[in-house]
Image (cartoon, rainbow, N blue to C red; front, side, top):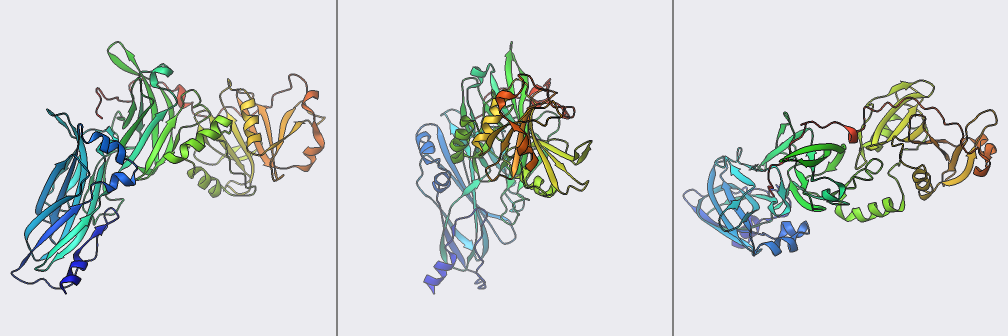
Length: 499
């Protein structure tokens, strides 16, 4: 029986906020028990691939801080123990004379910098007397990866026995490695900051009874947003820890220059929607010089090299939805699945001479545009990728098409027109793509289901006039490129490093 009781009360927590089942045996009146709690301090960093980095800094100024809180079945704090260490050795906490009953264990793990005279703590525990109110609140909005937070919980029953529980904190929040092709100084800036534009996450509740959606403390942004990631003058990469997370969060990338003693925002080089799930480890990579047609990468760190290889080979991010006859909902799902997109017209609008029109950004000067036959978004029959940067050569787009499996056929020219357009055919032979200059600047790739008659009107490129007539497309409907937005004082920057 004693062995069975030990097995029933020993808990190994492998998921954040997970609680084991409660022992249903009634408590013995007038008796108490002893609890021994062991915290696996290393597991969270092992899971995120950060062990080597943390171990390197522990002998220096980094400190690990672990706190164990025990709450009774009424949610009141019964015991609290905490310790600060300089190694990954498992920590053991002992609690004597716990009255019989059911308890909730909560373990919070964090770290901070201590240079011997001052401790730079980024987070604090608050309102810990009640399980329903205990929370972790951030003191600063910018954190390096060494200050990550971990959380674990378990439910145990004391029945006049001694029990042991091993808990393993799991990452709370996200790790974001901010990475640039060049340092801000090489681009001609002094700092580059990343902002979340819809809200700020200020902390999280520790009560395991809360749902994931109800765990986070958020506030709407009032006035000027504050950055949660930053690259300083000579940095091309820095690994941040952040509370910010979500499947669809709007981010803005802003450059800053030093004007005398003051920093002045230069321009928004990117603004769009990204995915940053809680507990994830992602890289946010960008190249300011290509950002008009190549958006930032915001995805799993181990996928960045493949993404960059495609980009460097010349494959653009224009991968429109080309299932002819499909509906608006399918196109919208395609957009939402992208690792970057930004709002265009936001709804179906009638486009004279074409049909019902919907578009969005896939880079700061590159859009995907869809034409449906009906007002309710049925029968997709025309798709365009439009580049609104007139300084980019058309070869960028023709090369990308060929790398995506399209074959160049020549110039499409009907005898009764003045137009000569480069025509490509998809690998499956079902889609044709025309590439041409836009009257309003930039370039267009137009896709539609293959028209067999078009194949009878292909001529060699060498026979086309040196300067053929440019097709006319509707006026530029964009609401202004984010890259050219006037900044004024719409954003805040940190006055001093806080990481």
